[in-house]
Length: 115
Image 1 (cartoon, one colour):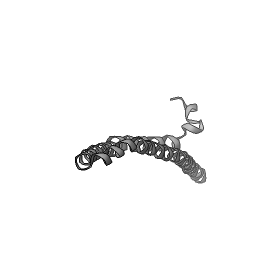
Image 2 (tube, helix red, strand yellow):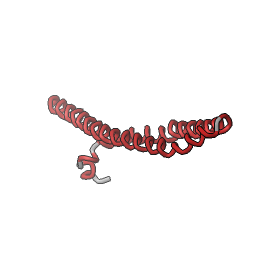
Image 3 (cartoon, helix red, strand yellow):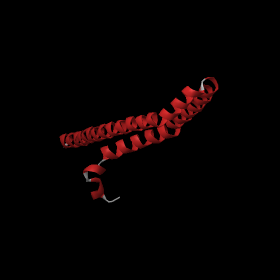
Image 4 (tube, one colour):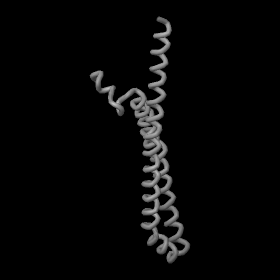
């Protein structure tokens, strides 16, 4: 990359470091935690529907009819959580950028002090 690319606010060392660390944790969460939770929830849902149909089919039909509303509620909750996460990531990137700039400037001041 050319040197002036790193001079942009979004491409400084602090932002790139935060992006690398958050991307790694996101990939880890997707491959482990989210996959396991989805598999567990689907198996619980199917087992619950089968048990409900065996014991009381009328209540099971009501539960199945309400299932789309529960799914929409989960989607809305996830969307709200993602919006909150984006705001937190932006603030975290900004603070990391300030810390990296301070550390770089401290080294410069110390090197000038040695002269």
